[in-house]
Image 1: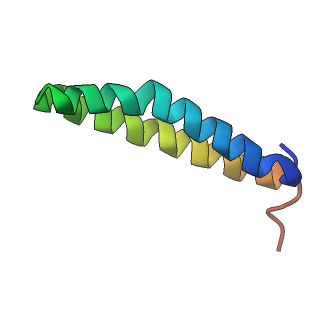
Image 2: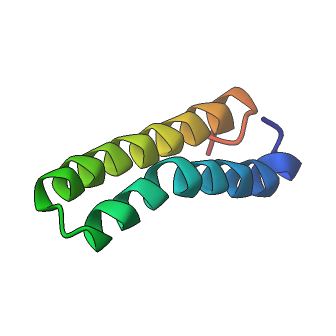
Length: 67
């Protein structure tokens, strides 16, 4: 991932996360399914964390992580 592409990568990744995880969470909340909502919140956190770690690792590979 090149620094110039980080914004488009982040937007695409956020879009993917919201479509795949966020909509399921919204549906569970709408159905008042607390057990499923809690499970989906955990999954959403996991996916967001993985995306942050991926972006952080890519910034070091591109030389952006050096001070």
